[in-house]
Length: 143
Length: 152
Image (cartoon, rainbow over all chains, first blue to last red; front, side):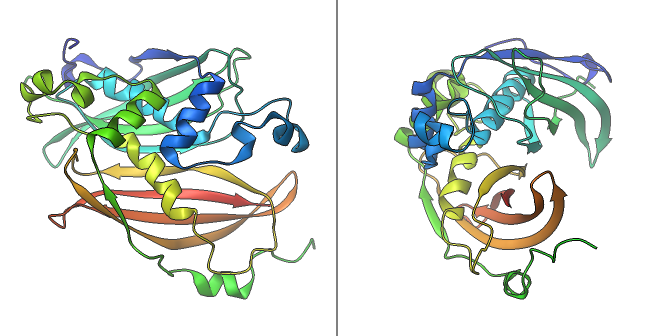
């Protein structure tokens, strides 16, 4: 597994290791099956067009899961994901690159835990920040 | 001023109403369904030998699994007539307290936490906040989540 990240390694403004995803139509079907979200807007193109969209759209909760994956990979085995909050602000389509990005916005010790607040988001090829989110992670400390 | 509020008395009265608790038996199949769907093959979730060497002592389920379970519990009917027919998932939030793994049994208790009205391009919209608390077989709170459903 990757090198462990420590509280002392990050500062306000530090970039979170980005994660590139490329959700395919098949992946949307897999997510529908795993999550129980069978809303046709995610796999039935005719239905999506009837809703005024050009194609099916990626499930918001799948995008949230991508962001959580980026965070859990960044914090390593000894880090903990504590809080996560996301807005499904804009739509994304399958068969495109979807970048997960983020940066550190604050770091502090609270109740003995070394907390790091982050701003994260998904960004599509049109540079739209489609799922803006915030998170708090707890990192191990060398102290 | 504008149109009448889209939040009816029945909606306001329903705040606090709970759905039937929902049981999730976490097993390796469910974990794999999830890690495959997200494309997240973190050894912590899948490699028992590697995970045993960490402080977690063995594989765990990804917390994002609760993104799916929220959908299952909130897919039950809203406890009031909903005149606004279109619906979108608005977002949500989680606080994670404890890891959970295959073999754990989680109980999801979901309630209607709040309903707010917001103005949008399409007119007035109802933001419905559905809160879920997951506890494990030891009655420890594993996570609390909010899912926002937008009706318009």
